Image (cartoon, rainbow, N blue to C red):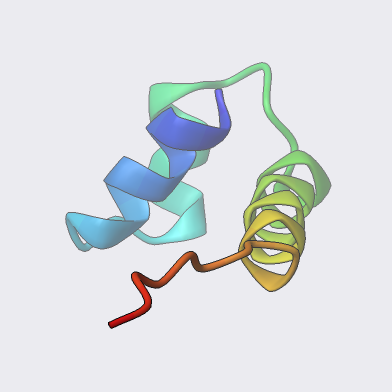
Length: 51
């Protein structure tokens, strides 16, 4: 569901439109999906090749 919410946001949807598309989601659910994605990115480890 997080991926779907982010895809819709990236496509220009606003929260109200997402709620129309997914009526079972509350505004809080959508915001929590965004916060979850942010937390994942914040913990991401980037591996680099050593020369």
